[in-house]
Amino acid sequence: MVVQVLLEILLVKNILGWALFLSLTCIGITAYYTAIMAWVLQYAIVAATKGFGNVNTELMYENVVSGNWMTVALFIVSLSITAFIVSKGIGSGIEKVNNFMVPTLFILLIIVAVRCVTLPGAAQGLEFLFAVKKSIYLIHRRG
Image (cartoon, rainbow, N blue to C red; front, side):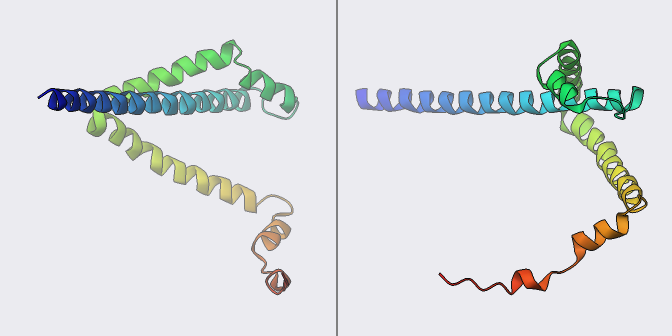
């Protein structure tokens, strides 16, 4: 009887341990991606307002990742948006957002691809990217 009680206690502690581990893992992943969302929003705001032509990119990077007030504010905005979407549930929140975001991602990808192939020097870049260099595969190493 004592052994059975001890086994039940260990089982409960094991389940609680896993629950704690999984909860902390989810919190860590959420914090990481929310910070990335804040950085992307900050870069998008700069691109839309000032552009990157006259911006010192190293200084801007340092400002973004150091946690200045704008990054913290956008982190809170990103976390609020994420919490709102997740609070709506899978069908009403995540699925509806994905139904909009995934096609938008592909449309933006197509726009960027068209822009890339219309830039000066695009032909040389595509040739370098897609040309098969047989000499690389014919290298014989003796070991």
